[in-house]
Length: 348
Image 1 (tube, rainbow, N blue to C red):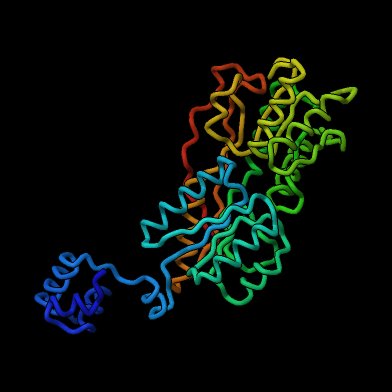
Image 2: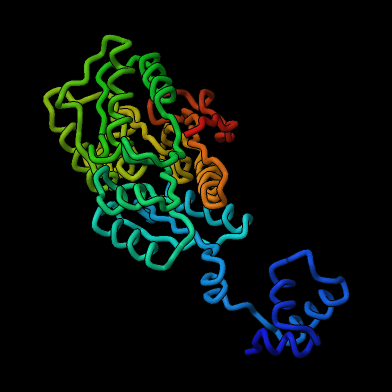
C-alpha cells in the first residue's frame, strides 16, 4: 500500500504539500495540486483514517444506538440517518439495544471508546448513568424519537398527540365507545406520552379508560398478543384495541385471529407507527404515521451542527393519522399514502 511519502516522491513535492492538497488547503499552486492528485490516482493511495483522526481529533464517524433493529420503524430511521450522514461526509456505526438498557449502555460505551464524533440515541429508559455522564461531560449527542427528561440534549421527535386526538375522533364517529390501549414501557417517554394522549383524547368525549382496558406491553409483538388475550377474556371486551406501536399491533392481530374473530366486524384495531406491512394485512390497519425519514435526517443535521460548533436545534414534527378499514371505515374513506410534512423547529 502506497504511503504519503510515496505520493510526495512521485509528485516531486514535500509530504507537507501532499497533506495540504488532501486537506484542500488553498495555499497550494494549481500545478502542484494537479501533480499530487495524479500521483494519488496512479499509486492508489488512501489516507490513513486512524492517523488523520489523531491529528485532527475527528473520526468523521457518528454512532447511532436504536431501540430495536427488528422494528421496521427503527430500520427506516437508521436508513435515513446513514443516508444523511453520508451526504454530509460522515460514516455511521449502528448499535441495536434490543430494548435492553444494559445492551444500550454497552453500545454507547463501545462507540465512545472508538472516538466517534457524536452520538444519536433512542433511549430504552430514562436513567442511564452512562448517558447522563456523557451529556454532562460535553459529548455531542442528540436524542431521536425518545429522550431522557431533564437532560440538556437536543431532541428530534414527532408529536403524536394531535394524531391520537384525530384517531379517537375517528373512532367516535364510527360509533365506538369501549376503547382499550396496549401501552409501551413506562420507562420510555414514548410509552408514557402515548397513553397520556389517548386518555386525554377519550376524556374530551367523556369516555373513561378503565384499568381493565389498559394493557401493558413492551413494544414487542408477544406483549401485544398477551394484552389482547386479556381484553378478549373480559366480561365486556373493548370494541377497539389501540396498540401504541406497530409490533404490538401485529401481536394483537394474531390474538384476535386465534379466537376466530374478525377485524373490524368483531373488534377494531389501530396502531401507532405506520409500517408498509399494514397495507397488506386483511383488512389494512389504521395507523398513526411518523415522518420517519425526516426525523432521521433532522437528527443527523442537529448532531453535525453540534459537532461543528453551530447552535443545535431540537426538532418536533407532526405525526398523521392514516385511515384504513381496520376500525370499520368504508374503503372510500381510506387516506392516501402519508406525505412528509414541513419541519417545525424550536431552538433547544
